[in-house]
Image 1 (cartoon, rainbow, N blue to C red):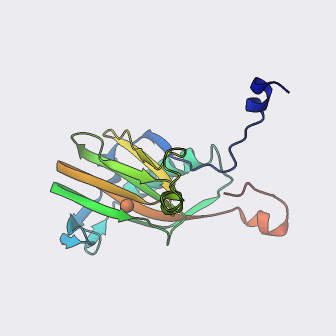
Image 2: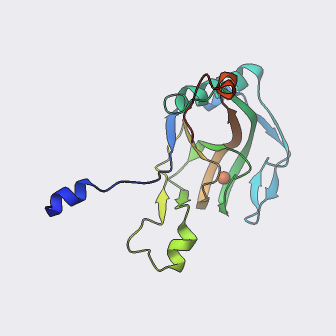
Length: 190
Ligand SMILES: [Fe+2]
């Protein structure tokens, strides 16, 4: 077997999806109040405050997300949606994940330059095995305004120190079509 043929047999066993599509944040109609310094990074956030969407905005956000996810996954309904705002002024956000939810999203309303960095799910194990030269440990999100980025809730990420920025962040779960439970739709796993 030639060297080239061997390379063709390589497989990627697991992947980490990142969905990206345009969105108009003004159409979400999110009003955030009671900002506090949250998380270990003391990021100014409405995470623990009040966040209300207009009814149309809520529907628009759900439709935008579901249209994107349905291209790849057999998802039926989006549930447990929660959204909040983070304001960055010479601040950052420490490494964290949203593992309590199936998915997370980020929409940058103000951004000077890319600031979100994702970590390989096995980042710590790769570091511990000194495998950093052979596996990509992190990925800088090429973020731009008016775009929604959707990724697995389990994925660790951080926000670099930035002079000025503002984002809408959120979490949600999805449920498969009820027919799937009856064995009528095998559905795609995730
Ligand atoms: Fe986050």
